[in-house]
Amino acid sequence: MNRDAVKTYLTDLQERIVTLLEQTDGDTFLRDAWQRPEGGEGLSCVIEEGKVFERGGVNFSHVRGQKLPASATAKRPELAGCGFEAMGLSLVLHPRNPYVPTTHFNVRFFCAQPPGAEPVWWFGGGMDLTPYYGFTEDTVHFHRTCRDALVPFGAEYHPRFKQWCDEYFFLKHRNEPRGIGGIFFDDFHERDFDFSFSLMQSVSEHFLSAYMPILQRRSAMPYGERERDFQAYRRGRYVEFNLVWDRGTLFGLQSGGRTESILMSLPPIVKWRYDWQPEKGSEEERLYREFLVGKDWLA
Image (cartoon, rainbow, N blue to C red; front, side, top):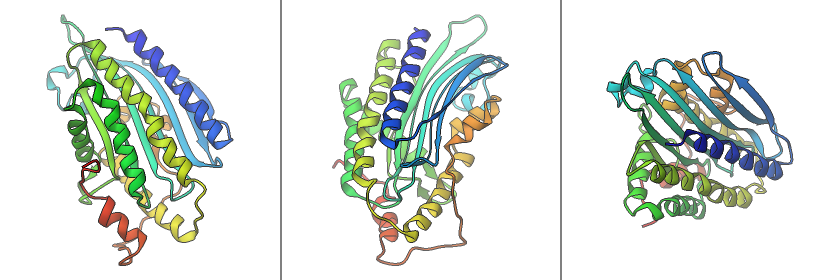
């Protein structure tokens, strides 16, 4: 197990992603370095009111604690009360143009220390897409790239991680998906450290090739108030998921994490309506009918 290699990789990945996003937007990300009194540090890179991104964040954190929070031990009760170390890179992009989907990407490494025993480690992460208007070409491209990231490690990983993503990014109280999915994995400790770390790296390296072609294809499309209004309404679902169901948000808050960095993922403009339904035959209704459904897009 090489924790320093993981940290070096994640900080380098953060800088590469931020540099490319700055070139795409034309505006500069704020770089906000911070220290955690309980142990740890991080760098939050945030853009607001950019030309392309209404809000975006690419955050690195490396924290330590004396006791794993409940959100991290829900599936590992034997680690309750253990000291821990966690590091990760988390990205959320909320573009201004409603035809460009919101995207989320995250990779992380956990290490827990049971008293008198060897450390217990695992990786997690993934990427997913939340469109406001559906394009089959974009959706297939995103899922194909997710598959390509996992093929070198075994044919079983993509269907497994795709299903995990579909099940995880699902608003149970709404009975609907947050978006069109992608891949998601957690508590990943298979074969050995090098294999697990390499898989996490491959997912990371495929994120930009999954998202940037969609961003470039849609960012110049004209839109009006109707599209912006629907975008704000659908962003409400994003907020609901992050505050009610997301394990990463819960872990950050329960572990005394930096609130500004944790809630960076929320969109800047959001609307809720009472029992709103899209007009039959509209593009908004098509999103629900054809895209917010469980589906094998590569079949």
